[in-house]
Image (cartoon, rainbow, N blue to C red):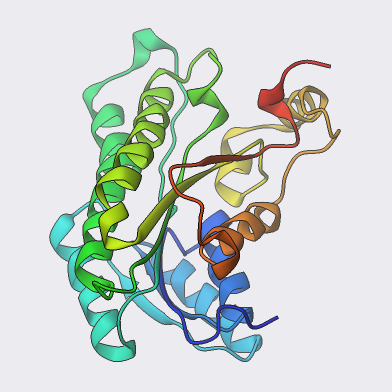
Length: 251
């Protein structure tokens, strides 16, 4: 499938997990992918995997929570490859902890990486996309924005903010023909998630998911690739749940 052939797409958080899976899938479908992340080693691994698929990506080792560095990366990608067609804002850092243990460091880092970087990604799209053709932005919400969970107060605030921001951006950027949608992954076994969830935790998540399994990064990447594709040309302001039925209710 080459439905993304020639499309220039910037992915934040591409050093691993859902960001990596999305970058690799879109490259396999013909996209020219720019990958931005602070993890230089992880970016190099993603680039190697992409090369093994016969595609070549462009890596940018930057702190995506900083406006200047992310906008510079987007401008460099445009200079090399042409106007951007999509921006996928997948970068996130997570810490779960009870409310009484929350401190400024946790709040500031999660807000910076999880929410501020989405704003800068949207500005990168504004600046980097063709003003007539427009393009697509994909953000990432979470089931915690729909359902309460213990120990996730900061993460919930960030992801609830992303969901609300997605809708606001969809309206603000519609005149530029820039579509903005969010993907809400269910319990997904990324390397980062495995570090903070033990086997018992995954079993709880599996049992809570009506389809009877937890997700893999590739499941989420398929939704991302759809939302940036021509097949989603009339979809904007949508929060697409890719969660095995988790937020639909108990069963």
